[in-house]
Image 1 (cartoon, rainbow, N blue to C red):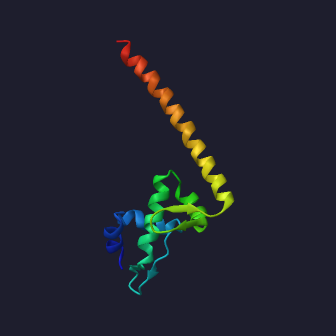
Image 2 (cartoon, rainbow, N blue to C red; image 1 turned 180 degrees about the vertical axis):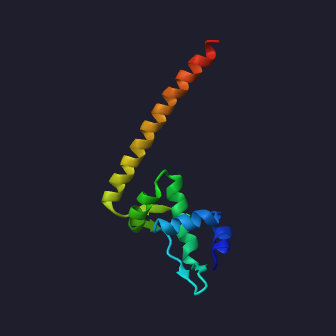
Image 3 (tube, rainbow, N blue to C red; image 1 turned 60 degrees about the vertical axis):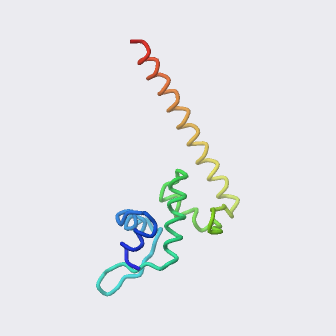
Length: 115
């Protein structure tokens, strides 16, 4: 399937799909004309990438964690102990960012209510 078909099948933009390729997350075949040719398995790969991006991982992290993920077509599950440790660290970084944003919001709220 060509890039437009994969985009329609996954909801990802063509630009995102090209980016995933440059990051090593997708490896489509190339036709002699230069067009990308995706396999049906790439639909599932894009779904996994989107799930991990939505979980706050960067594409660099996703390249590292994908080989350690089990995909049962409904959810992703980590299969390597060291991956769980990395995901816990990522969650802790998100918790810190949330706390900082909450403090920032409280400061802004205090300024707003002083008027």
